[in-house]
Length: 513
RNA sequence: GCGAAAGUAGCUCAAUUGGUAGAGCUCCAGCCUUCCAAGCUGGAGGUUGCGGGUUCGAGACCCGUCUUUCGCUCCA
Image (cartoon, chains in turn green, cyan):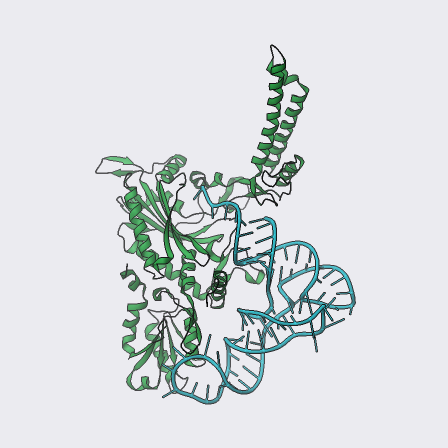
């Protein structure tokens, strides 16, 4: 009974909503496109993933420290990083070919065509007249002058419109010039829109150009601008890393596929500073380490693959993605980039401050190279949740929905039930909860038959259920039932803590690395 | 952004050519019940995404808009 990937993905989304993992933002107001909220279970799962990453990075590596920097940064940061200039183009789409163009390029190309016509006139005249005075011809020939006036008009209109931010006028110009799409040959254009990757707001009570401030589109720059602070105060020696988790914001043109691409999302990044020339060694090392971290979650090796970037960004000398097989195909989960000294050098240049490291062995100062690991927390969440969700057919033809989350990451670690809600069983269950709740997230349920309660916990991914029965009152033993195998074993109440500690703690997961 | 499909109770879905919005599950209060969802009684929950229009009458038809999924596009 194969289920279509498309339908399966819909199941994941509705399961997330039904069991308190993810809600659409502002749902009662019809929602906000590509923004989602984590519910009571989602927040726990997300927190556990973050904690596992943080401890694996910061706690297990004595040369990596963590910071928590702010979302607002000095506007010059984004000039230095290249984000301000990279995404500021007026764009227009042709509705027939569905191709997107930069409006300024379309107009420039049109102007270039008119210039070609002038050149043709000049060439023709050159051949016709002996002792041809080109400058004189250009300034007096009626046809050339007409073309030249046209060009000047276009350029003036375009400049005025652009400076005034009048995008309707830019479109009108394209319409007036009867510019057609090179692919479809039609003039069926959308409106001109200005796209900027970054969200902006302003500081202070008065809004004007001077106090525009951006929400960071990536967390990496916080680490670069704090590089020297951390290195000096932490007495860090190369190679060392700075880790950070936090929100980033991108005004995506198309944000889709549930929490895979959101406008507000959370990154977990680590920038590893190394001696120039050693970066490839550490690049390879981190590729291996990060893949192993993912594999430790037990979602299945076959779901992961590396994708090496053939076309490198201007700052990188090596880059790859760890891709995961989502319900909609293999997509980027984590990026590992060798960023050279590009970022620190840019910040040196724009800030005028030296961001160098004094190497006592070589007795010289230099700007370190950087190897970055950057994973999307929300994507990680989706990878875990979508591979955990299963519809099982049991003996006897029953089906059950089970969320086989890695036990250490599950929102609720254990549920405690009284077999029936009388005869003192609820009281004993409560006692057990009181011994466990300081170390584990525990829940209690006495409604409906115990079988039904097991299934409820299966659906939210609780790895273990403890059931108190009449025998418990006599010999202090309970049954503990495994989510995945559905098998039960009987143990003494005092043994529960250690049993769980070995199976559902972040510590148990860290030890497996 | 373009194109396609969809939006009715918390969930999954009904509602004849336009004629009083229903069911199952869930949830809540009880009853019954000695370990894997299905027993009994009662109850809650909906301006049919939102706004207009056509009509005596709209969940259905028309227009706009929002949201979601899919394809294209985009993703230094």
